[in-house]
Amino acid sequence: MIVDEGLIGPVEDHRGREGGLLVYPVYSRRSGGLSLGINLFPDRKLCSFDCPYCEVFPFETGFRFSPEFMGKALTAALHRFRNREVPVRDICFSGNGEPTISPHFAEALEIAVKIRDTAAPGTALVLITNGTGLLNDRIFELLHRAAAGPPGLCVWLKLDAGTEDWYARMNRSSVPFTALIKGIREFVDMAPATIQTMLCAVGGREPPPEEALAWERLVTELARLGDGRKTGVRRVQIYGKARPAPEDPLARPLPPSHAEARAASLRSALAVPSLPPRDSVPVEVFM
Ligand code: SF4
Image (spheres, rainbow, N blue to C red):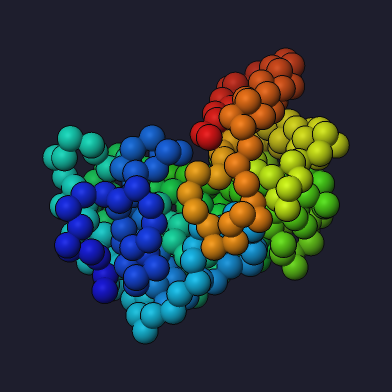
């Protein structure tokens, strides 16, 4: 299955991608409208993280990813949603896992850039990534060229924690925290990126004050990297748990006031003048 022809309109959740869809329409809070998701894993979830809040339910299909079919499905979806009241805001690599792990990622990105440039110039191209691909030189270079160069790939980098302890709770990965942060530092110094942070409670525990402080310091430090215009952190998006997850209720939503307080504190920290002058970094909350 390459695209759900029976779907009347975009869905509010991502269930279709667990049915083998390569391209699926979804209303995205963080995109601010309709997003066309590209799913590189129609057969099963594959990720270098194991977040307790992950919304991908266990599944297995006989479908295999095909760059050719993906291209056809993307073209068809762009055509289908052309001239709709709600325009397509972006084409987004996300899906059932970490896109940069897929052996098809580079080819799929190239195809998506070509189709976007021909069929929907001006539409943003987004990659939602947990950043672990940055530890691979080939992926780092690919993302650097795509984000800093003409494709203008918007890299949305997950950064859920400022401490090793909270990273272990939130992302349960074998990738060392220090190595991951080093890769993220190097990337934002050379290319534009959006930092995305999930705030939720895990196992009945909220992020402790020392975690909140360490995260804020880390984000502030990252925001000082790059030239602050064409490279560096372009925005910070804090979001909350809004959809069901297979491990519910291990991860629980926090009250919106928690996220608003964290965002307000970060905005104050980022407002301290820096040299040389740079664009301000918006901090958004989606709870
Ligand atoms: S990084 Fe994304 S896909 Fe991977 S486990 Fe976490 S939430 Fe799920």
